[in-house]
Amino acid sequence: MSTELPPTYPPFSSNPVNPKVSDLATSTNWSASDGGYQIWHGHMQSLLGFWKRIWEYDSSPISVNGIVSGGPLVAFTYVDIRVEEKVQQWIEKASYVSGTQLAHQISTGSDSIYGGWGSLGSFATTQPGYIRKIFEVGDGESLCANSWNTRSGYQTGDYNPANDASSLNFPGEFYQSVIMKAVEKCSTFRPDIVKM
Image (cartoon, rainbow, N blue to C red):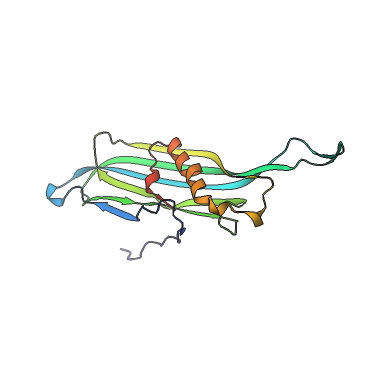
C-alpha cells in the first residue's frame, strides 16, 4: 500500500471570481445514528479550453485622393474561446458520514504580461467542482459533455500588447463569456461553486 501524498495543485489567482466559495464545505445532513446506507446524490463538473485573438478588418482598403494605397485597417479584435465542458450527476447508495462540497477551481494563463486576454491563452480545471448530498425528490442522473465556442475581449482598432488593459475586466468577462455560457450549454452546471 503506497503512502505517497497526492500531487499538489498549482497556485490559484489571487483575484477570485467568487471569493465567497470556500475550498471545502461539509454538511452533517445526517448522522451515524441514522444507521447504515443512505441514498446520495453526486455532482461533478469541469471545464478546459483555450483562446486566440482574431483580427477583423474594415471592408474598404485605405485610399488617398481616391487612389488605393494600402490594405484595410483593423476594425476590431476579439478572442475566440474553445471550451470543453463536462457535468455528471449520479445517485448512489453508500454510508458517507456527511455531505460535502469542493469548489470548482479554474486556473487561467495567457501571453499578456498584464494578466489579461492577450493574443492567446488557456484555462483548465485544477480541481473539479464536487457536491455530495442526501438524495431529494427531483435529483437525477445525467451526463452532459459539450464542446463549444464563444467570444470575448473585444477591442476596437488593432490589438497592441503594450496597451492591453484587459486584465482589469478579465475576471468578469471570463465569468460572463465562459462560466455563464456553460450553464446555457449544460443546465446542471453550477456557477455558484466556481472559484478562480
